[in-house]
Image 1 (cartoon, one colour):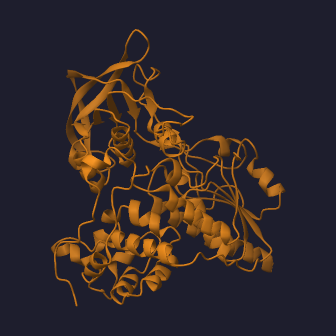
Image 2 (cartoon, one colour; image 1 turned 180 degrees about the vertical axis):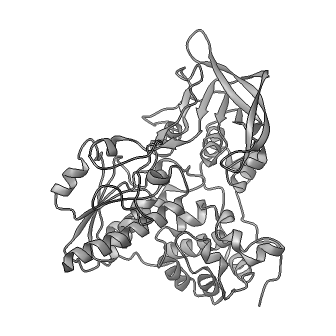
Image 3 (cartoon, helix red, strand yellow; image 1 turned 120 degrees about the vertical axis):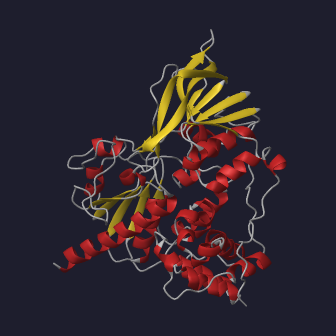
Length: 465
């Protein structure tokens, strides 16, 4: 029976007052009844517009129909054909600007909650279905994947299914890339990331940690080791700074370092060997998802006042609406139309306050958003004792500087020659943030899958020759 409600089932969440004192997941997941009710809102459109909005091409109406039929594992298998990280994507993908944006139900009311249903199906699978450790028959070829983030994991998964020996090289001591060190536990529990990686390893993919390609080994070294092709999915982990006075003061962090200390090193635990300062007032500079993650993490560390300082208005804020809503509920304060100009320290070299200027919005810039313009006569001060810079990241140049023929653009991103990820170096492919700059998990996954198919076709063609 079709559910004609114009409003989606609301995701149950932890109470804001309780959740700011823990790092447990905020969104609690649909109940069986909620999932069925939401699935019945799907119109099962024959032209499937939502699929066109999914970067990995999940057959969305098909898996939703399986929920209606109470065939939840079958729904998971449909998703698995296109995505190996469905429990991750169901939590962190911006469905509202992708599949749900094209949902016909959004023409009159709210779109079907596709992301919430994807999470429900994936959580059901991992809760109820026995771990799959089957391995494919090897085809005699091997490929190296550099980086174990969403792009690398997706590429490795597809190549593994095709029979390749796949070795993933990860610079850190734990796999997962941004899924592990970047996204906080309260948005994406690390146990979920770990189980996805463990299943990939069970299928025969080798994970080699603590190896920095570009330092421990070069790309040319990998070819000398017998790999037919290499995929670079090293992400964009080099933080940007504004270059304002005071950025070297004690108490100034990049969001990258701040979140890595919290997510990977568990600095919020009392016995952590990688502590982090616990100030009274924090200013986070930026308005993206990373800025929101840092601000909400600070709140959970016991910070009394947390500010988001962003130079545009709430309308232009790039973070997901859901995350902004959660942040407001948690007491995060938004200082909008404000731009940081100076970080001021005390006599001991620690942050004391910041100086900002008011902004007004002008005509749209190249991004299509209203261009912020400073009002230099409007300086104001904000008393804080910690500043977190969350204004974006660029790729680490270690990999590209360690080899010849691998070209990058002015932002340090690897240049690819086609949509399949082929770089300017023969048999080296790249995808995800290392090519596009900071983007979404699902776009990186799509790039990894495309590169895997291109590598397979190229290797197969050369084999025939």
